[in-house]
Image 1 (tube, one colour):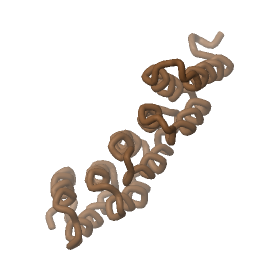
Image 2 (tube, rainbow, N blue to C red; image 1 turned 180 degrees about the horizontal axis):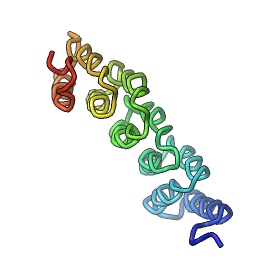
Image 3 (tube, rainbow, N blue to C red; image 1 turned 90 degrees about the vertical axis):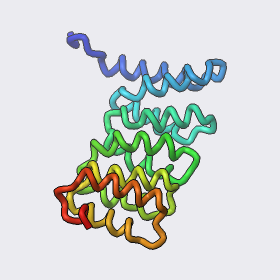
Image 4 (cartoon, one colour; image 1 turned 180 degrees about the vertical axis):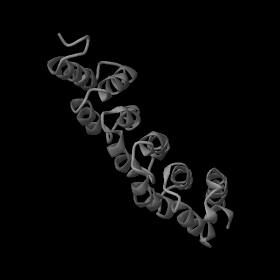
Length: 178
């Protein structure tokens, strides 16, 4: 007895079924997007299915895949994938999902991953979210990096506002007061 749990064979069958739905262009796009979300929770195979569709030509399918990536069995590995979209048309969906993914990443790793978005060529919205995520989930020393981003003469005013707001979450850290 499996105690009410699906067997490995049943999980593979479920993922195969979702893949068939995705491949059937006769299905509505929303049903196909739902198939991605349904497959995401299947250990191993679900994540592989989701990753195959993050760059789909259909916007709804690609965005469903980006959103589902954090619901796989490896949400920590979703963050670098999602951040690749920080400067593109999918930034809104990717950074929204990145907020959940960041909770599953060791705080000591976040400055390296999110710091590139904060100071790189990403959209302002993405850079603001990176600042918020660093303040919320990063180690205390991340505040010095946020201070550097704030004092950069080229920093966008909206990014500065997001950094000030984020710094309030870490008032116990010295650079939050600077």
